Image (cartoon, rainbow, N blue to C red; front, side, top):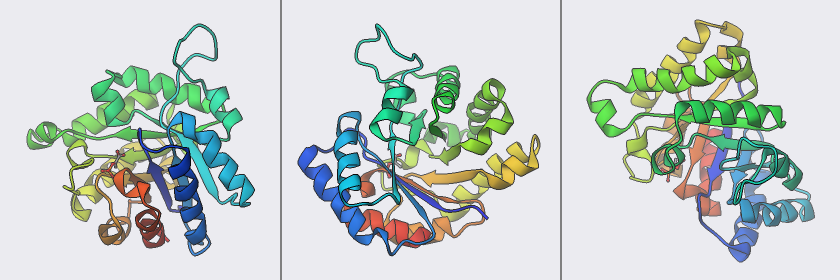
Length: 253
Ligand code: PEP
């Protein structure tokens, strides 16, 4: 049985004051979410504030993740943050290969695979994002794109490494657009991902959590997460509002 996971990707939003109130707001409804795991991924600079609110409130049932990491351990890499720094700041997860990292910052499949390995070596659970653009979907390339992105990680890290990771299927055309994939569209790709992994290792495929991301909201979360291979959500916009985020957590529950 895979425990549902709801992860909030705050992207480059917030400040200390909003972090304080958002985290407090999530804590206030967290205890109603008994079956799902809850994860927040603030911008780097707000991670310590989020961690301190959680500690102060004794809310160990909300995990913290980062949105990216550098592949190097330390040294002359101006502006970068390493896995050990994230661990030290209280992170247990890190998002890898978000489509914004791929498209805006030019991260390749190989870069994402390297980050995946570095995250795991540093004791972090990677949440590896895959997904096609609208043009790729319209060209019937969804499966080949997702397979290419997934295989890069499997080739670099080995299929067994997926057991200690989370996969997020995020169709790029659905991110931040309000154009949510239908439950059937999402389920088709989730099943494709799981079957592809099952071809290499059935146990890993059965256990790995595959999240859906792309305009998930409280009113569409239940129908998406209710699908057989959808194990939760990676939430952007709706994770910035405690009530919306908790609404999705409750749907996953
Ligand atoms: C995301 O960026 O990971 C995401 C899913 O964003 P949104 O929920 O805003 O579409």
